[in-house]
Image 1 (spheres, rainbow, N blue to C red):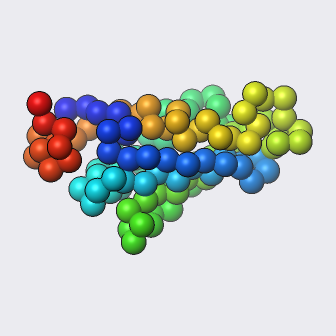
Image 2 (cartoon, one colour):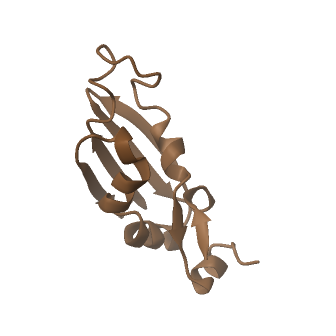
Length: 115
């Protein structure tokens, strides 16, 4: 089954120059396992498409049940240089939570998502 990340995680984002920083935090340990498996650098890059001009880096934070992503070249030069509506990258977290991931029926049950 496919579910939006909103069902298994929350997120925060911000900026460092022209790089958006997005942290995705699982609600439960089973959710973190899904994040590690499904929310890869390649899938995040594809999800954002042309919004991210540079590379995507991923950092695993198992003690927090979180992943952190750096989206290079995503802010049109950064806060003081950019004409983008969201030059500080605050909406990137919400946009990433719209990404759909594949979970098994067993995982859905453990996460309270089974129908």
